Image (cartoon, rainbow, N blue to C red):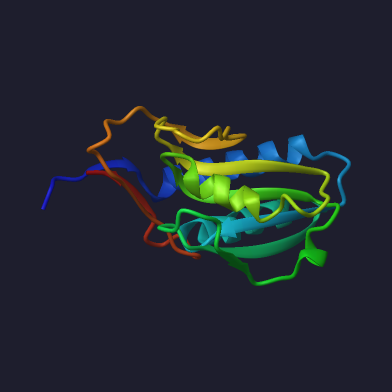
Length: 168
């Protein structure tokens, strides 16, 4: 097994989540409702954690949306746990754990392209800076340059007990 280097511990991950929540709050002053669209599974768990902080610091009505993607497919194949009436004409924030090539976020964005919305923003915990898709991240916990052979492992749970980010 390759050696693992701890990049973020439990406390640091929570600090990143808290900071991103405040950035979302600032970016959406005056909004009444926000849809947190987490990409299954770690992006969705991160969305749950962001929702918890946003409920404490804001008055937004928050809708949590789960996006399931066929990541290995060459075309967009997705399902969501809510129908589009839940995100129509609202602010949408797409959330994932790691941005590598940008394909997953691009596919996540595709879910919302045929529905009117106010704006779409993206959140990632770690941006590896290897984009091959024209995806920009709006809110990032940690941006780091890695070599393609390296792998970023995110371990995150809903309660935050086991949170860790490793580079291997």
